[in-house]
Length: 155
Image (tube, rainbow, N blue to C red):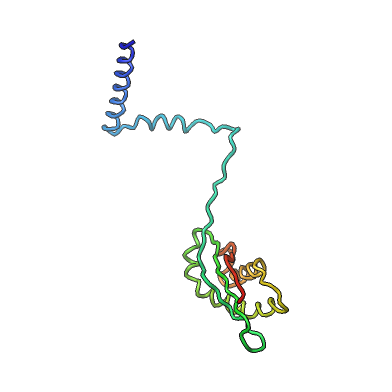
């Protein structure tokens, strides 16, 4: 029994030495094995996993809009916005944040007094859809997937 254990240990040491020596001389013994395994056909029963890219965001920050009614500021709407963008277009959108700030402020100063008239509450879904259309008009289609309102308050 002891003899069998010594034979197995000696065999494993020789194989480890062989693989180590081949690596030392620049021969990859596992590469040929990986080529053989890689050439095998895929299992037809295994479902194909779609490559999912995580969403990429550009932080817009705070959008504070004064609500002017009867020539005076009655309320102020504050929204924290985040823009969901394709990964490869993050830098372009980040560089154009000042253009978006100007466009958003001008449009919201016209829209919010009408939207909040007669005690109505702020509807984030409607405002988000309007900001997305405005973004596509300002930057062009395909730069921003969605405009998300993280927090909103009317003061």
